[in-house]
Amino acid sequence: MTHELDRLDLKILDRLQLDASESSSEIAERVGLSQSPCWRRMQRLKAKGYIKAQVAVLDREKLGESMYIFAQLQMGRLTDEERDRFMQAIEDIPEITEAYTLFGEMDVMLKVLAPSMGWYQAFTFRTLLRLPGVQDVRSTATLSEIKCTHRLPLPSL
Image 1: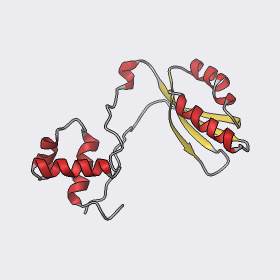
Image 2: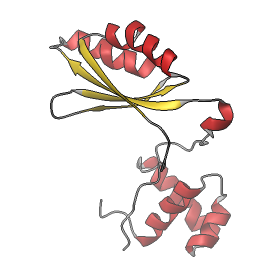
Image 3: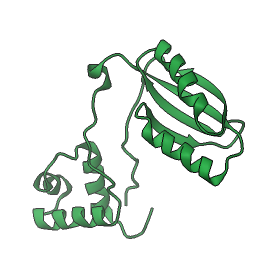
Image 4: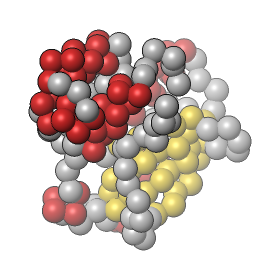
């Protein structure tokens, strides 16, 4: 945690994580500031990159049946060009909602939003196994979601 954030900055960030649609006046009231200083702090936090984006979190169940599947990829050696192509392909596939590099036996973990197991099976063969450098895919299907949040724990000052 950087030392340039004070207690009020952290309170503002936490409020925005809970509901970014609140106005600067509403946030100011909740964190104990007047509107103008709160607005200036929010602008500074955006300018310094602490706030990357303000988005709407959609209810995926209302948009139809789906499940998350975690796909672990084992990669072969890649040239710089192949690695760039792999990274761009991951960015371009909307069903891949998160991607991480790993230590251990597997090299990459993907979080895939799949409408069905049949769809995912076809996706594995027609998409994942065709990505540059992918040698093996191991998948784990989720049964239910216990917790899903984008809220980061912030230290209290």
